[in-house]
Every structure is written in C-alpha cells, then in structure tokens.
Image (cartoon, rainbow, N blue to C red):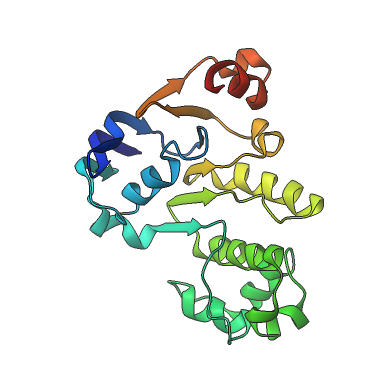
Length: 221
C-alpha cells in the first residue's frame, strides 16, 4: 500500500495538489483520472520523489529511499541509451540479474531478436514502449507505475498486456494513468479522480458498467 498524507505541491503561488490524503491499495490496479494539466504527472513525480513537496508518502510504511529498488516506471517516452542495442539497454537498466534465456523468453512476447540486437535509436515509438515493458516484466517490482502505457502498442500487445497486468496485480501495487479508457476499463480495481487540486476515490464506478469514458464525461467534464 502507498499512503499519501497531507500532500501539498505548488508552483510559485499556484497550488497544484492541495492537502491530498488517500491510499493506493496493495495488489490492485488503480487508475488515476483527470484532465490534461490537472496535476496527474506532478502527483506521479511526487510519488517517485522527483518533485519537492510537503506532506508524507510511505510505501508500506517505508520512505521512498527504502522502497526505490522495488519500484519500476513505464513512462510514455521512457529514456534509453539510444546508441546501444535493446539487449544492452535491458542489461544496464535492469536492477537484477537474469539469465539470457529468461530475457529472450519475456522479450519474445514483445520484440523479435533482430530488433533487440539493433540500436534503440532506430526503434519506433511503439518498439521503445515494448522495450520498457520487457524491462518491467523482468524487474518484477513491488510497485509499478504506468504512464500512458497503451500508447503506441498494437492490438495484440495490448490484449496480452491486459492479461499480464491482471496477473501482476496479485503481487504488485499498480498505478496507471492514461486516456485510452477502453484499454483500462476492464482491468482496473480502483478509480481516483484528480480535479481542482483535490483527489476523490470513486467507489461506485462499477455502476457505470466499467465505462471510464462515461464517468469522465459525467464527473470531469
């Protein structure tokens, strides 16, 4: 569980996040909803200790410094070593040792061997996203953050990823942010709405038949 207490974040005199108090439950997929510019990315950066803030964030009772090795983030545009191969990036960015057979087993669901042997600078946007998902799978983190994870993925990969996320959530605390509501609607367990510097836990979203787009239109817009 990730516990957020009295979290305040402001830029100059503008309050972006105002005294937030909520908990991201363990072993579930939580979805963070809100308009562009409302502060979703800022909140994620606070959780990852990439922004200064007031308040307290605890990962199962521990500070970020104690939990950071158990965290992995799939960014919308994850940074890589562009002049190195996919395989070399996996080796350098993975925070644990795994066998080559294991790497190839996981990678086979996302990218072919020839692509992984080539330099990442030649990868498409979707291929870079898949490379990040390979590393996420191999990392087996306790806390997984996903920023627009479905962007750039083909249909087959998205369907495979849905299955994997539901499988991972048995042992991971997962927080997702995105706008492809059809992708997330069938897999999330918890829904949080960020609006007007405040956060709300939407406990009755299932009454909308799991349609995030309907909730967005009703509450956000």
